Length: 166
Ligand code: ADP
Image 1 (cartoon, rainbow, N blue to C red):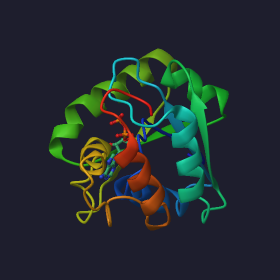
Image 2 (tube, rainbow, N blue to C red):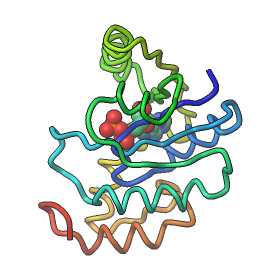
Image 3 (cartoon, rainbow, N blue to C red):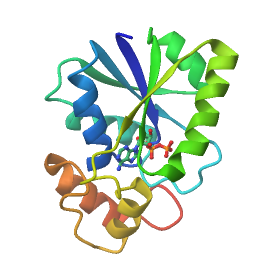
């Protein structure tokens, strides 16, 4: 597997995502981060364009990492960007059940294989939903989001209302 699609909501990118991205960048020729909109999620803080902009800044140090927004089925997105597999991160045993079901479905539907990286212990407790909550309440996001985006994400979240985009 040379090119992987790393899909997610990334609302916003966290230090946990960067753990997976940096390790994948060292092991795969090309890593494509895919911002996929999940129609069942109604708690968005950042628009897809904003998430993409944050991801591109966070991934700037890695020349073989790029990011794009995709609509629709993951298997089609993988095909559209020329990825030969999907990459996902596993935080806890709780992630395994749903992740394995999704991986099996993508393999059955489109022959797409999924590879998993186990989250580093230092970041395995970080989730984008907790980052959104802490940021909206004006808490300190240091260590939870990429260092170079600390101010941008903190300021944006502190100004968001509770029901969607600014
Ligand atoms: P989702 O909407 O599927 O939860 P996310 O944007 O939250 O997508 O996460 C995208 C991917 O990053 C998933 O594979 C998820 O398991 C992984 N991930 C999220 N947080 C962490 C973390 N703290 N450590 C490692 N991987 C993570």
